[in-house]
Amino acid sequence: MMTLRQNRISIFIICVILISLGLVMVYNSTALMAYEYYGSSAYFFQRHLVFILVGLVISFFIMLLDIETLKRFSKPCVICSICLLILVLIPSLGRRVSGAQRWFHLVFFNFQPSEFVKVAIILYLADFMSRKREKIKSLTYGFLPPMLVVLLCFGLILLQPDLGTAVLIFAVAIFMLFAGGARIKYIFSLVLLAVPAFTYLIINKPYRVRRIISFINPWKHKADAGYQLVQSLIALGSGGLFGVGLGGGQQKLYYLPAAHTDFIFSIIGEELGFLGAGAVILLFAMFIFFAALIAFQVRSSFSKLLILGVVSLISLQAIVHIGTSTGFLPTKGLPLPFLSYGGSSLVFNMAAVALLLNVSREKERI
Image 1 (cartoon, rainbow, N blue to C red):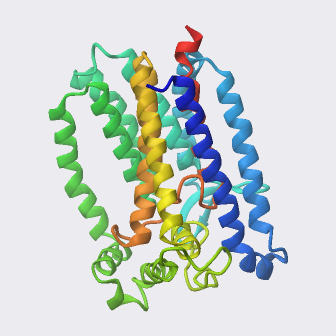
Image 2 (image 1 turned 120 degrees about the horizontal axis):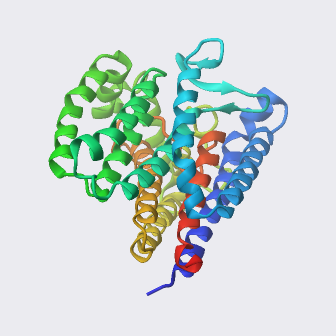
């Protein structure tokens, strides 16, 4: 069996490859738009590079911390993230874009607090469940306290509104509670209650209903609600086995909206073909595999739960993004980890991996 160090190096290399490919694809998919709107074809590329550097600095800081310090940071982090979710909803503080109020406009970039919440919740749940192992099967003392924190974050993110991110955080929490030893009947009951709630949230918003309808038959709605999915499928179909060549794609030329964020996998499929897209999927599968090996090798429950949370977060985002791009899931704007353009998402995904790599050094510290 591979050692912890070997597994850690493997994950690091995989992330470097994905981030490097993302840097290339961000430039490739934004050069024309950047030149037209900002006068420089490297506008988005340069910003993305800065985000990578910020992510590296934060990741380096995380790697310097020991496990006990990480645990002490768990509560302050989740409290801070909740406060930010509240503040971003205040009109004078939060920035509203296309009807959604999800960002703080800072000097250089927009900061999305829900991305911070993803990492803070994982850290908080790992710490809570590792400390409350004897009480985790209790509804009052083990299940409800962390779930109330998760539901509070869920509700605040819904108010932005951002159903996709809210559901993602809820799903990661369910995985962690299950792995942490919470009673199945509590989890099952919560999921049963969530089904009608999610159904209501979808049917209550006409644009969400249109997404579901267009998902069923996108070609029938190719001029309106199904436009993005149809253009995404055209991009993937045009790529064939080997792709049209890096830089040779047509869908990024204003045919496919959000080509550098929500549909960057489609551009990869068009220009690098089935082999290139398949390689990306393989890299994510390898990430999950090596992270799972680390989870089995570390001793503390905190480390195991944190690793599970990070793997769930990265893999679910990748599954939803790829599923959306290929038409297997309804259209939902989630970035592809490490590859899509987006400062907050990239920085905090890098921070999440840094947490994983940090706790994987557990045996070396003992």
